[in-house]
Length: 47
Image (tube, rainbow, N blue to C red; front, side, top):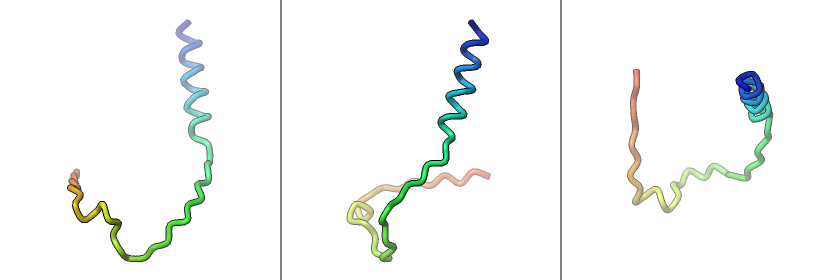
């Protein structure tokens, strides 16, 4: 039973790492989106 679970996990990891091409039509305009003016953005700097 343990071998079946391990094989299933390995196979699922291999299939989830496929090369998927996402085509987006985002054009860099330099302007911030409307939600960004009122958003709270946190940054974590780990070293």
